[in-house]
Length: 235
Image (cartoon, rainbow, N blue to C red):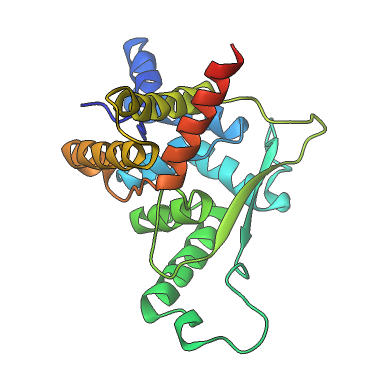
């Protein structure tokens, strides 16, 4: 069963390149670089989560997105930068006991910091790093306990806006239609959302390693359905 929230749609792009004569590493690098130039880091961390060691071209692009000093040697500098906020979990006043990061969260922070330093030096950060990188960049999809570091991709060239990603639109529409299917069966709004979440979770288990580490929040499913219904009503 195909997940509506599929983490590896870009595999098809890589397979097409392999069929054209690319070796696997070059194909993955080509697809990853194209998405990075559009400000999309999902193929980057998805390949890392599955144990792929990125080549020097990919590591060089990520280093340039993290550190301005790494951009001067690139023929095509990045249009986006990666920003990490290590202060996202700070609050005013003395933190309560339940706000103090536990030992596991501190390990996450250290692995992230060490991995970012490795990337700036154009070195492979290791597989465990990518899970934490993904949780910082896409916390709505990946979740780690007590980990509140946040990251964002921000455009730095003179062009305004970010190109719409058709894969995101298709994925959101698939999730929305999953809820709609339950609504058409007569289920109430909240029950249909709960049923869709359970169906996606079941599909994740069938996917095995490809679904590992993903968390599908009700908010994501709810928003996808609300936007689908809103678009349908406007037609």
